[in-house]
Image 1: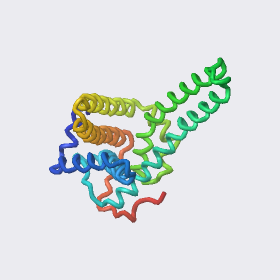
Image 2: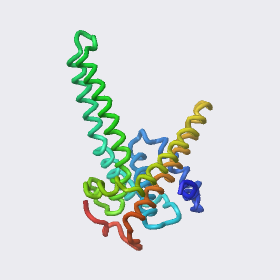
Image 3: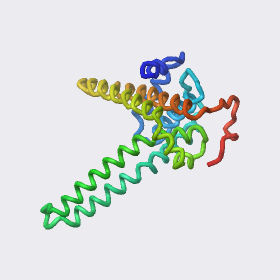
Image 4: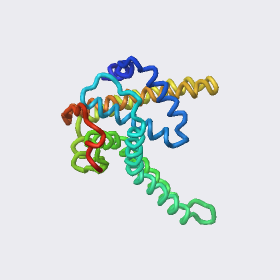
Length: 231
């Protein structure tokens, strides 16, 4: 599946155009809206892959893609609230128990426990978020991303765990390549962004394929936007 995911990106005649658009949007992510568009595209990748599509989707229907991406971004933000809140709470507790700028036993303990909790919950979010996004992509309901029953059965599945590890490996390799490219000032950084987008498409394809294996999804050919389920 690892090799297949990398070739998946190139299965379209317009693959170079897709990577170019995705990379440019990623570079413009600081403008916020391009970030929504990239997320919307990745959700299309998941949605198509779980239905057995062999080719990556095109960048079209921009308005719908932006709205889809905004919802996906909101889901990711909601998932990240727990580690963020923990980080703030323990940072405040550490500061309040610091005596005259000196870190004592109590403040040090708060800092250590807080760091461990943030690390554990952060890793849990990284592991669970793709499943939440996949369930949203299948049902088009944001609430489905937080379905406890679905999360429990999916996150404990060997199929999902294997797919997640493969997707992680894709991102890891992309990170190494992007890091190596950084030795070339500016140009390496820019090219690294395109490499990262390529890896994101491959990684989310892996998640989509695994989701399709665990939760058989029917094709919805000819579905119109107004036929999608409401939130």
